[in-house]
Length: 122
Picture 1 (cartoon, rainbow, N blue to C red):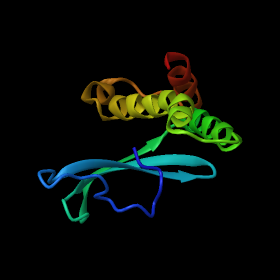
Picture 2 (picture 1 turned 30 degrees about the vertical axis):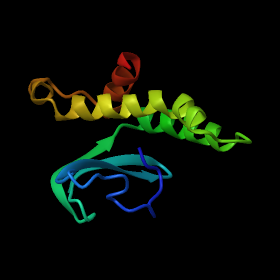
Picture 3 (picture 1 turned 90 degrees about the vertical axis):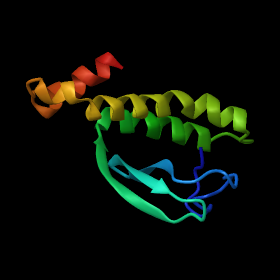
């Protein structure tokens, strides 16, 4: 996991690593979205066509953990894992949920009701 937009997109790749998939997050003051990209060995990337808007409750969880991590005096890889692992898992679970074809067959409820339901389920 890289959390630095200035690190090469092929950081840590081995010569045998080609055509890998990256999940890029875009954090805004009031939201979070994610896109899937194919990345080649030299760092060139192409958009796969999958863009997902993450619900507000998931963004709130991540922002809370991110801000808590930022208040720590000494940030270690273990501390990053402690603060962010659960929130990243929630984001990934939400992405899987949104991409699931069964979800499209379910009746859609209002945004507020749907957000509360997702919050309770997570």
